[in-house]
Image (cartoon, rainbow, N blue to C red; front, side):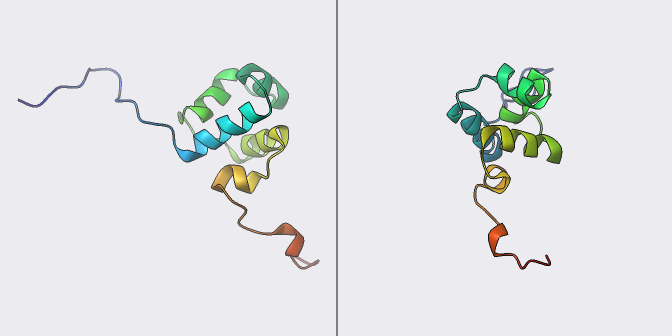
Length: 92
């Protein structure tokens, strides 16, 4: 007989690389969840869910957190820079 999972709560999954990058960036700046949330005007639970992979950050939240953590938003979102901004032509 197959093993039944508990009802009412989905099986937990490990955080994604995105969630781990947000958590690592915050911790590298020495900030608590509460301090990070207050620094960008978000609820503490929102930042906690981003780091626990409960939800992906909005574009705005991602940019604000990247600025607070002093990390390139591309590196935070993708793990590496996708576009070298300094190499774009002046009319781009």
